[in-house]
Image (cartoon, rainbow, N blue to C red):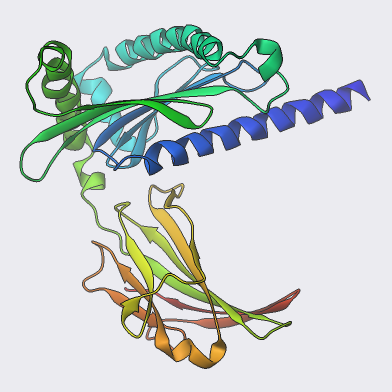
Length: 323
């Protein structure tokens, strides 16, 4: 009985930790435009079986580094990072030590935040988890200018954002200028060089349309899914009579796949008598021209159709492969 409860608690902790990290990514990236180089640190209350500190590095939206308090090692997440160790033998030792230093500092920072918010360990022990995020990054803009930021969050809320722009000021000159123009930008340029074959690739989305008919009222819910695209940026929306339509629509977040590509979805609920007026509009750098997929269920060139019966309604789908 005690063993079963222990396993249950540990599995729940692992699941909670995964959900917290996913939430941290969503909160963090939803609040800023994604720069070219980003480092995100997540620090949790220590729990059995779950790393209490995780650090992830992103370049152009792709995860390329990972560290956690179980392994205590900074490790590559993409094959092109193998070049780094050959050109810079101390790269992994240096970055591992930096991550460990941040882990140690975060432990004290989390306790400080708890005190600032007038919380005790006993008050937070009944919660799912108490967690803190720190993110920093920089970018090279199309006009040649440079930007950077530091952002801090506690329990899913951002409490401090510092942006670094090329403007005068003693603080910027002493610290921001060194970080922005010497350290972060240098790392960005180097990593873009290492991963240029992957980071500069263009993978078009495969678009799948799915329809569900409600048994109760006959209304239809259509889902437009985009699979396997790169880079991350995609513009997808519903249109009615050629105009963007937001009523009765929902959408997910752009999320990564295991192969480094991304996926996204959006849905709309409509009267089937009017479905000829609606389109799923998709724009992406991998497409030669924007896609406008109708809801009529007509057969698309290169597409396949299928129907699946589920409780509560009928799902039908048709997919479009741009290749």
